[in-house]
Length: 163
Length: 432
Image 1 (cartoon, each protein chain N blue to C red):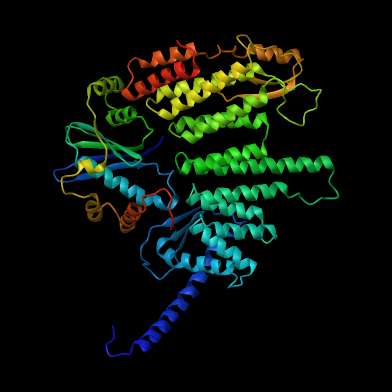
Image 2 (cartoon, one colour):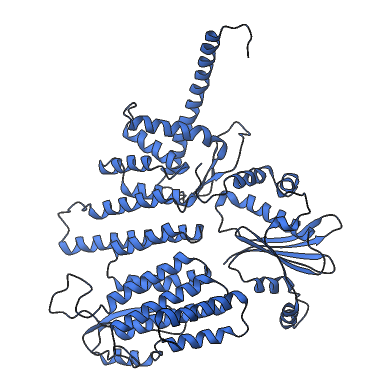
């Protein structure tokens, strides 16, 4: 039951800007961590860009679940967790506004009435004709090593790795 | 393609150029190999390597070694693998085919390099078995290599299989007799060594289980180790049960982790209250009664059902939890059938003979076991002060649990709950 990242972004007209992020990548092997972090940033930015204002959504990609909330004022937050982490807890986390004293009860009431869109893959967020591979190649969030990591991971998408 | 050059001469030129390239590459690769092994061999250094990893790096950017060391992590850049692996693999195969002689140290180096890159090469592990048998390689060092390989490939079946061979070898090998040691001291030292090996194996399994979800190979190795190194040892089983509690609570869909708990429960019921007419340990004398701690068995099952109920409520919609509940309830149900009228609704009398006792110090604290003579009135007071024995689980209580959940739960949880109810009626057989 893991929480990997929590990012706050601003949804601009054409792209989203990362304002602040926190990561817990201790469960990944040491040399993968920097690439994983870059990927999570890339994914968070992409998700916020493709989510309309005033929407909550969950995107499933392999063994990760990304939960996003974009407010009406274009401020968005993304939580990336594993499939065990309860969805409800994530959305409560995303909604937290420390200035409101009774935040928890207010948020719970809101959540009960809100519809959360569920995407089964990242691909469903993309426009028709857009490919994730192209977006990865063009991304400024990802260094060369991460892009190489992505290519090898796509090729070896099997549980038994034979180098 | 050179025109006008006769075919034969072109072939000769190409072959010699290729040979030059290969020669240079070999020199570099041999240097690489010894680098990897030198890094690993630093047993005494404070920064003992505890993890290896492959760094995705398709091209060699700079003219430098592909070995990267950060703190106690060893990394190998991926570009060098396509040169290093075939070269080293080929050498080993030639050795096996008796077309190439390699001395023992070279074999240690080569197999080490090979297995760090690809731990599923049985041939390499088998060469290491031979080296262990002839004394050129210490079993401890081999186990260390296995641990490192598992940090990169936590499922690798060949690594686990080889590990069991080494452990058996360690168990069978009698330590050298020391004139100055008494028999009692020797067996104490042996016991300590065994306990240490056990702890180490538990740690390796736990790390591998964390690195890959539902890591069947790691958990079945863990079971194997307990069966070999801790047979009938109630304390170890109870410790494992309590130490795994937070782990399974944080990995609610890890089926193998819950299966491990089912194994522990089964072993504990066998050890604490074996079926009437036989003893749990073949070495027991005919006069001594095997321990029969029936309230303890009931308490075990109650605690387990409490844990799984709590998890089912907190984390709805995980089939693993329901599957675990089925197993636990079925084990309890079958045990009850084999022990009719035993350890039922009131606690058993603790004041008879030497017994194992379970006591709960406070809510949520892991159970402890105390073995002692219970004719001491203090002991009885301690037991009475503890939590009263909970009601034994029955089909009825299970149905109550299911009904309680069905109100206001999501569709997945609902379907699991209904399936469980159907199982209770069909398989266990006592309708609500």
